[in-house]
Length: 112
Ligand code: 5GP
Ligand code: ZN
Image (cartoon, rainbow, N blue to C red; front, top):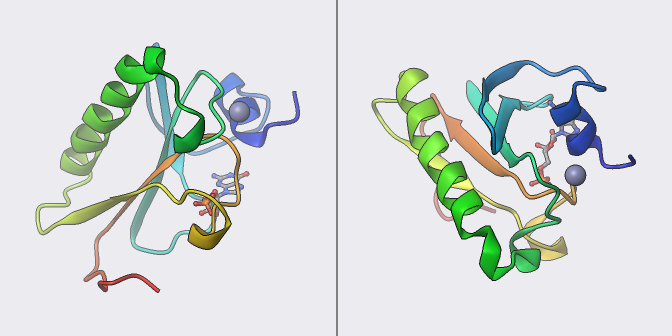
């Protein structure tokens, strides 16, 4: 299995796990861009938002619902951001769908 995030989900590559259920796995980003920087991925391999199919609706709903729970349990009362970089212009570097949770500092808008 060549996908690093699939290997993190399986446990073959170690990660700092934050949350796991039957559909979703969340872990701390190895190169945090904010005091709280957590990645949320589907256990099923999907390359990115452009590759979602009609049957993936429950997975997307689970990812977003988990994001809210993690933000809450991480104490991000003052705000946080959910980001899915998609394609080269957005700087997507990992071809396994992932949402970034970013928080714990004032975030700039618009992003660069
Ligand atoms: P993207 O640039 O695709 O939106 O986000 C990929 C993220 O994955 C980056 O923030 C990067 O730091 C993170 N990342 C890449 N490889 C690993 C890894 O092996 N472990 C962890 N925890 N994060 C990783
Ligand atoms: Zn994968």
